[in-house]
Amino acid sequence: MPSNFSMKQRILLTGVTGKIMKHKPTILAIAGPSCGGKTRLAKEISQYFKHLEPGLLRLDSYYRVFNHLSIEERSKINFDEPAAVDWELLTQHLKILKQGGSVFQPVYDYTTHTRTQKQDPLNPGSLLIVEGLFSLHPRLAKYSDHKIFVQLEMAKCLDRRIKRDVHERKRSEQSIRHQFTSQVKPMFHLHIAETIDQADLVISGEASLPESLKKMKDLLDK
Image 1 (cartoon, rainbow, N blue to C red):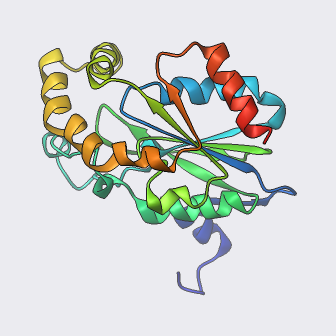
Image 2: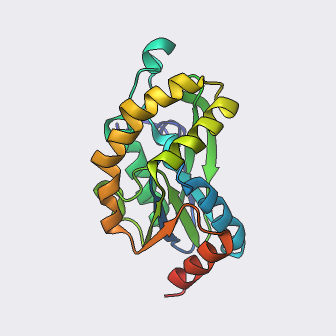
């Protein structure tokens, strides 16, 4: 970045708030298949460990900017492959957060398939949860202190995805099934399934929340 940029310009370009915390957070990564239960578990962990003032970094917020494409072209993008992720911004933010800093997290609009103008401040306390398909990808796993893989059969992931996307993203069941078959499922087997080997803990996407949270507490207490 040019040295003659003002501090305000640097903040706008990097998404860094500039606030430095006193303590570096413990980083907990949660990966697994689409609609396997990652987001639900991350939210429950945030509530259960709220005394740690957890922050949630959502990998879904870090897809690349596709404003230059038409909505029709954006709808054809494969968001289940690593190439769709803005790795530069994601790793930059993760490095800052790991050192106890804070950032402005992008906000992604899933109906228009691109990043919005809004940004959410992310200023974690003693715990940072990193949640998303590629949380245990080699580019990210090295930053995490604890790693979890949420496991669920593909057929059940599809059922959950249909229910979610029909109601929340206003998509047809036919289009959801086509995307799952042509992109989601093959990309899971190609890029995500193998990252289970990085996990310290494997949790079933159908496990009861008390059971999962107990395992989480045992992991964090180590």
